[in-house]
Image 1 (cartoon, rainbow, N blue to C red):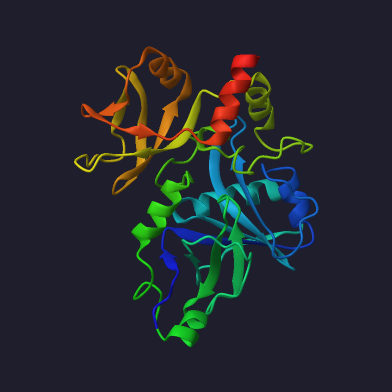
Image 2: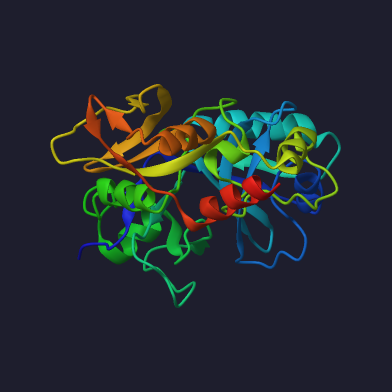
Length: 297
């Protein structure tokens, strides 16, 4: 029996458990931690004091604490940094080596529902239509399907194409550690930054950028022509550089775009191109509203 979910080997799970878990996260991370019921998922990140993303994650509230679905390449560094901030707090922090992540690529209008073989199921809040994700062990998965999901599951390129189409950047593909500000990867738009929190590491920088109302960079979806096969890092020109691709899957890509340069090029009638081939940069509704507000300011 084939699984309708994609196995994500590039993701890992970090467990925070203990009576002080929420208190610890409240003073450290970007996402809201109040009124957080078990089973609810929140998107957030730990930042540097300069406001750049060390690691972003999906955080699932459990009865014992919180589980973080995080990039595998950055999970150990995140654990180390959280332990440094822990001090005398009663929080146990450990990577769950035997737990892996699976993800759906279809909208989930019905909300959270069971996933066969998964021990925890949660909704990815970064998608407007929602996407189911699950945490499982080899044993729990094999008990249902009889095999590890790496052997037979939805192809991972389907997962990447879906997130690219929906403008969802992912660490390890679209950005590394301490490279981008939350706004660069649309965290403020995707619900990953609670600006009304008392404090979190890097908040002063993030709040200042928000108050100024002029976000310089955004990660946006890009449609490529059929004869164009660029690699991540390819530069977008119009005719001066306005951004670069970060993820590519078939005819779809994500790019980190300098909004001011793109708008200047658009006003002058210059068409965005890669290797002298036109590309289409998507302007989502939230960006249209942001640009209108900037013009009126």
